[in-house]
Amino acid sequence: MTHQEITELYDNYIIRNDEDSFVKLYFYIQDNITPKIQKITGRADIAIDIIQLSWSKILKSSSSYNSSEGSFFSYFYTISKNEALKYLQKSKNEFELKAQYHEEEITKIENLEQDQLGKYLMSLPENYRDVIMLHFYYEVELKEIGRMLNVAPNTVKTRLLRGKKALKEKIKF
Image (cartoon, rainbow, N blue to C red; front, side, top):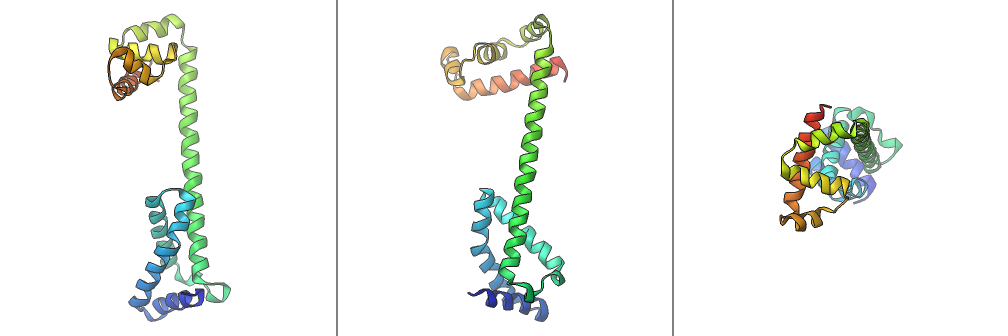
């Protein structure tokens, strides 16, 4: 299908309210733009969401598209690409915010007096305390901790997460 044919399908839908034109257009877009958006985002589910968002934006402001300025395919792709880039930027900002929060937690822990931190650590249940000590103080990998304690690596991860959570509650930050 050419870009001119795609533009005609869009015009038929908008001007004549031709549902068949919309269905053809929808599936053509789905088959040809969604994979491009998936390459940008790296996720099929996000690409589908972005395509739906693009449809919503375009149909809400159908008067903003002018076929004399270019093909509908290019117009749709540009909107979808921009939405994908917004998604990536938002994801990056959320990641940076989480990383900043994590750094703040580390700084607070480092600022605690060693004996104060030791008291908090000693008040944890033994299975949490052992995993935290081995992982953070002795820098033992989770698989090795599992072998040392004779438990599955997933159990070690769970104990580490729960121990960190319990420690965080005791330190109150």
